Amino acid sequence: MLNALPTLKETPSQTAGPYVHIGLTPGLEGMGGSNVPDLGSGPINAGNGQPITIAGCIFDGSAAPVGDAVVELWQADADGTHAEGWGRTAGAADGSFRFETIKPGRVLGPDGQPMAPHLTLWIVARGINVGLHTRLYFDDEGEANATDFILNRIMDSRRRKTLIAARSEVEGRPTYSLDIRLQGENETVFFDI
Image 1 (cartoon, helix red, strand yellow):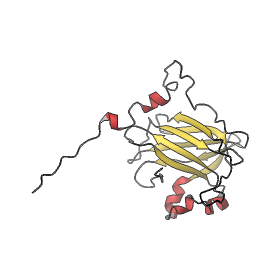
Image 2: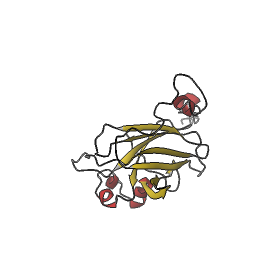
Image 3: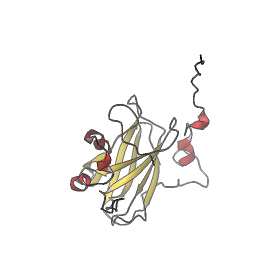
């Protein structure tokens, strides 16, 4: 009879934290030096287009805010050209994150048809071994969302909703809000890239 092997625990070197936000965003952590301003901070240079705000919160499997996450945003410009806009921010203690950018245009999908306007998000935090990739779609792009190559590969329509940001107006500016849930009920769809 074989003996059961003990479960091995991850070591700090096998995860992205607990200091990932310090390494990727030292200026936000009050550390000076050659990295200030932090790479990717500030308004995202995605060309001309409709200015928007992207906002959300990151929650763990027990619905607690993840206060040490780093979120990167990748996007096309307003014409759908992938001279990409890129930005990075550290999440706040309450799990919130925010980007000032422009609304992206439609890019061609793998099937040669235009995909719905979307942003790609990459998330790292303590306990995450490999960065998590997801997308943010816009709720005011219903027609485009209905035909999007990637969005419609998600068979369960309830899961698709975890990628669609709600629009509101904040101080006269379109703001799209999307909470990211790492596990549990309403877990965000992540892509294996």
